[in-house]
Image (cartoon, rainbow over all chains, first blue to last red; front, side, top):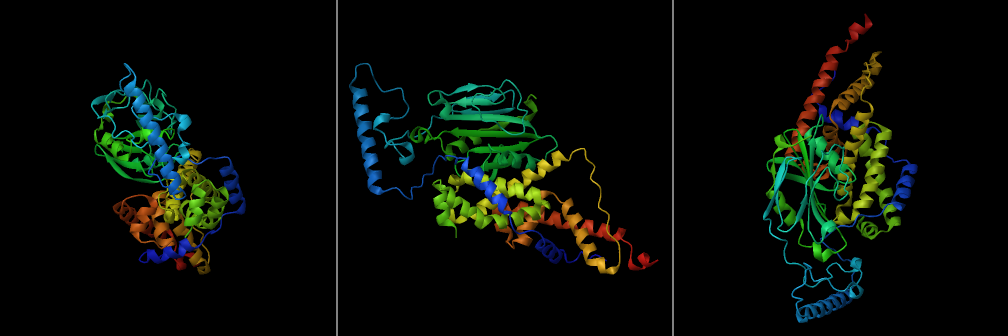
Length: 267
Length: 184
């Protein structure tokens, strides 16, 4: 008879058998593909293992001088008032390369605008608060694809964007029925896609459970009542100082305002 | 242990990443095969995971945790491969593998085949928990970290997986003729 009272031992033996080496051709294939693939730029937290302190101080001082100069020009010009830019963006010709300057501005925006506007998506069955002054573009069609193409302004998602930074900072929202997938499978598939997050941790959004990305990947994927939701904060790496306030803590503030209404979604 | 290579790779050094891949790839293959029970799927999952790791390496905060981080990516890649296979095989009726009955010399092989069938009936998520715990020998809290799920979920999956295995093995044992019946 098959012994079932020692399943642990059987499992240990069973799992010992099997291949333990990746074919060398596979290593070569990975190498070839990395040659054609860049690394994703991550927005903070910044780590500078190789940055020379003198260079850092010099760059910060240069940025400060430029900021003071620009500020003086603005204050001194008649009718100029305070500039319309939300952040003191120095003259790019005097600003060091962004890759070498994690915090190029000595005084980035202190905080993001308050979440005083409310958006309700009739397409996707979700409401949330978003910053004052932001624009919104409601979805005009259902999200039917398996995974999420991240093209700004796609009609299958709702887009909430900073009016100035626009494609540098935005929230995007979409939902779809999870079909035959289990909630765990659906969430895992989203996170495993090219537009997902490598590292994840559990999250609860309005009582719906799922995963949220880690390491600067601000994507929350949750399911409730047979519907999967994907909520993403996108911040580009083009102007780190300008997008600095839109960090994980801010994203979590937004998520805390979310109300899921799967019964109201339109497919 | 690969922290220096990780740091170099994070700065875009492809040679360093190639070295990292060669240091960790075999172990990834062993894990992926044991989860997916298919060599080609496992190969694809490992390649996909390594490529994702290269692309996302800058999001790894602690270089010392490269391998656990890679294993989490690998687990997700295994889930994706399993789903891909499931979609591909939709509509194809999977033939059940009948137990091989022969002399008692086959008893061990027979038990092994039963366990293989029972293991394949588990969800890929359940298999992953068993592989990380029973093959890698990781304690359950570390399994939770590597797979990226709460500890309670690990325990739950472990419980259900073993219960399902026992039920499958018991069912097969009831179907299998005894030695006397075989001799008859």
